[in-house]
Each structure stands twice: as C-alpha cells, then as structure tokens.
Length: 132
Image (cartoon, rainbow, N blue to C red; front, side, top):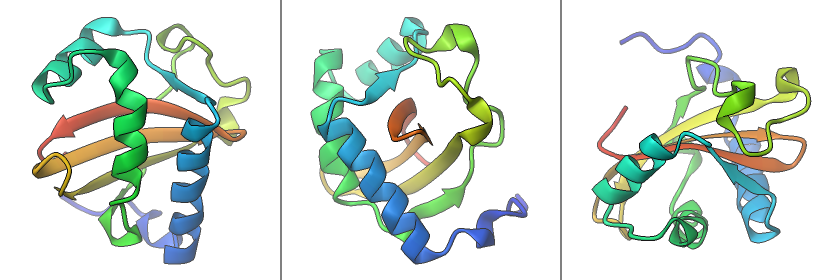
C-alpha cells in the first residue's frame, strides 16, 4: 500500500506535541467517542474491555507507549459525520486525524489506534487488534 502523500509532513516533534495534546484532552475530560455504539461495543469486546468507562484510562496509558515512529498517517476516510459523535466538532475543517500502530506492552498485541483532534478535544475513532 502506498504511503499517503502528507505522511512525511508530520515531523517527530509535531507528532510528540499531538500525542501530548491528545493525552491532556483525555485527562481533562475533553474526549468523545462515536455514537455508533455497535462498533464501539464490538471493538471493546475484542479487547476484553467490559465497560466503556474503562476506555479512557486505557487510552491514557496507551498514549504513554506511542512514539512518533508508530505514526501511519491520517485517517484516509473522513472521521467525522455529524450524527456519529456525541459532541461533534464545530469546524471539521480544523480537525486533524491520526493512525498509530504498534506492539502494545499493555495489551500484549499489535494494535491500531485511530483518533482525531479538534480545538483541543480528543475524538476516539477506533482501537483494534492488529495493524490497519
């Protein structure tokens, strides 16, 4: 699969900053997940997560594992549809999306995390076993 053309535009220092912004948004409760509960429940079940409230602490801990070299590019399809989020971003044009894949020490598996940032808010898109 060809690399997205803007993959090389994200410098390691920029990615470190985005990782920190995402982590701080979750710590400060500025985090939202898809209103598509079927997909969310399926993903959480595959990761042996019984309660959606456990997702945020898990993600915060996973962000301690993420490094800039785990970055695979932006989400290739738009991550936002108004009805898909409990608090959709006001200006989707300002959104930045990210895909990271790595061997997680915590989950003991290769995982792929997809998320977006918009105005200091974290928007969870997907967390799956395996690479995307």
